[in-house]
Length: 303
Figure 1 (cartoon, rainbow, N blue to C red):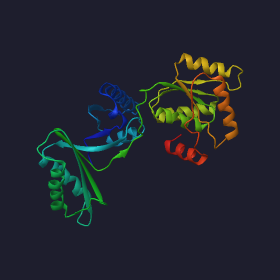
Figure 2: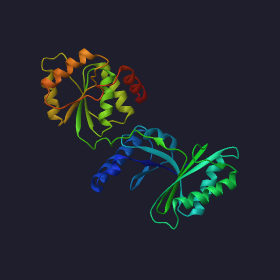
Figure 3: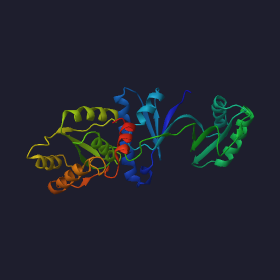
């Protein structure tokens, strides 16, 4: 299918005030542009309330990039037309004929924003009837073989057949900076991912060469442009160095992958020492996760 563009949805941003939403949306647009540039993909981006549109000639590669950008709830490759019902019907029939036969069933999911001389139900009834005539397929709103989404927004209409799940959360860079202490392998990198999903910039502080390789792979995969610093865990000035570094880099908190299921006794001791010697709040997003959950999530995220 030769789609026209990619329609992007975001969730939490739409709940913010107009001023904050505009700032967050601008950051998300910037992050999308940067990710496309890193993959040597050209794109043009336009916006509407609650929606971002990515215009690119390489839709398939663009979809893969968007899966790894924080702040995107879902996205769809779409065909664009006017908000005239006849135009919508022509595109809908063309899409349906490529996916339906008389043995299959379908459902239309219509939404509408703006002022029109018809309702969403009017569109569903009229275009549904046109599709039945063209394909002989039956309507099944509960468990259809094929779903066609029609999103009418003012004078434009977007038609698509899938909603691809995004990473969600908030755009990277919209919150404060957090120091990620990478001293326990992949668990701490996963912990950093969770805090980045909340929009925080990260300062990575690691303790060995293995972590360096894992970090570079991780930051490349998720389009993260963060400082990476090494500190010797065995140094007698270890905690002093952490406090100094977090102050110089204006970090608001420290995050680690310590938890009470994998290395309970060791991690508990490390948490106690951090709380005693470090001035900043300490975040422990993996505290209740077991080893299987951590492994599964790391594999899912490419960590």
